[in-house]
Amino acid sequence: MYEERVVLCVSNAYEQKYYLNEDFETLPQTIKDELKVMCVLYTEDVGGVLSMVYEEDGTLVFEVDAQEDDFLFDEIGSVLLIKRMQEEKKELLESLELYFKVFFLGEDAAKLLEAES
Image 1: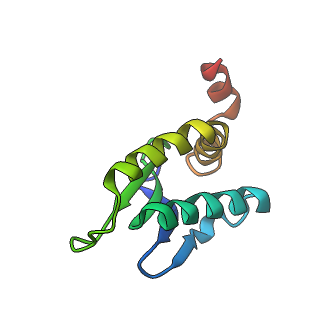
Image 2: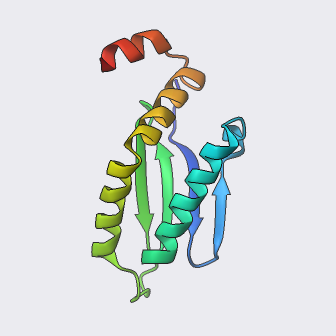
Image 3: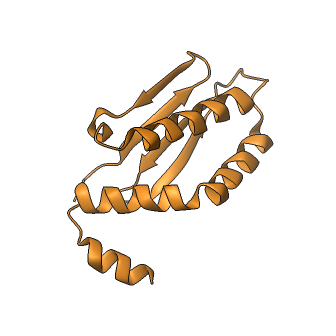
C-alpha cells in the first residue's frame, strides 16, 4: 500500500499549466483528455490551483489552493463547481478510484466490484 498520497493531475491558473502524473500515462487517451478538460475548465472558471489526489486508501479527492492575494478567486464557485463535477463525472471518478486500487494498491478487482454491488 502506498505510504503517501499520490497526485493524479494538477491544473494551475496562475502558470496556465496542466500536469498529469507520468505514472498514469497508461490511462486511455480519452480519459486523459477528459481529466485535462475538466481540470483546465475549472481553473479557467474559478482560478487557483486544482489538484486531484489519491488518498492512501485509494479515495480520489479534489484539493483547491489559491494565492492569498488572489481576490479574483471564486471560493463559492469553486465549491459549487467541484460538487457539480463530482455528480456529472461520478462514473469516471469511481472508475479512476477502482483503477488506482487495482493497479497501484494491488487490491482484488472482483472483490471491489462485489462490494460496490
